[in-house]
Every structure is written in structure tokens, then in C-alpha cells.
Amino acid sequence: MERDIERYFVKKAKENNALAFKFSSPSNSGVPDRLVIRSDGSVEFVELKKKGEKPRPLQLQVFRILEVFYGQTVTIIDSKKQVDEYWRQRRGTS
Image (cartoon, rainbow, N blue to C red; front, side, top):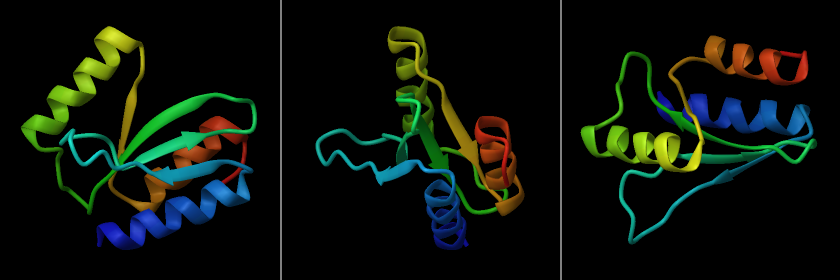
């Protein structure tokens, strides 16, 4: 379930000295699930999905705007394995 992946992601964020704020913007649909702030000051966006689920077209449109106009990448994660890989790439831990 997406909720399980999201809880796991937040747990791993804490283990890696990062904040993983739930990102909601009521007047702006399609924003990514999490705003991640790492101890080095970098900020990233993460969209968490249940296994095999893809972002909705509106989400993809928002993600593209973040990338093209603001230089921000949105990482899409749909498994605990991908959560581990995300943190391994950024902090050297799983």
C-alpha cells in the first residue's frame, strides 16, 4: 500500500537526518507528496505511489513544470526497495 511506503520513506528520512514534510497545497492539485530537506540544505520533491501505480496526467504536468521552469526533479517511488535506493544514493545508507 502507498501508506506503508510513505511511512517507510519518512522513517528512512529520519534515519538519514532529513526532513520529509507532507506537501499539500489545497489550491494547487498535482503537487508531489513529500518535500525532502536534507542536512546539507538541498531540497527535493518525492512522489510516493503503491506498487506499479503511475502518476496522474495532472501530476506529470506539475512535475514537468517543476523540472523545466524551476530546475527541480520529482523522484517517483513505488516500493520499499526504491526507498532504500533513494537514500543510498543520497546519504550512503539504506
